[in-house]
Image (cartoon, rainbow, N blue to C red; front, side, top):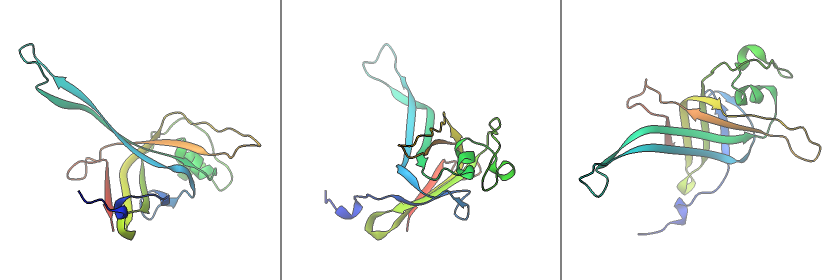
Length: 165
């Protein structure tokens, strides 16, 4: 196998937007952007066999996790899953119950051979706990965990598209 340093990547996400390529840029992130996928399997077994006969996927989950470095009302609304279109302005927002709001995630970063890698998730909602700590000796940030849902309007059904240009 030939090893190429061209395909070994490092670098920050250049742009992170909510709402697709022409959506709202959330600004700077801290600690990177992590995309995870986890599978839960049902292993098929019977008394007459000494090994598993097969496996079936019973749960397939994808998440995008990051920390918004710019703690502004619109980013708080995204992190807390609040409909920001009606409840925020440039300096304030209303904190209400969760709206089960779905968003589109779009971000780009360095790819191999001076190409860009694009990630576009069509259905995502902020999940998990969120907290803010006000401290004079630490930078404030918004840790956010977006759970991705299958987009059943796409063929085939999928969580996201990833491509390089």
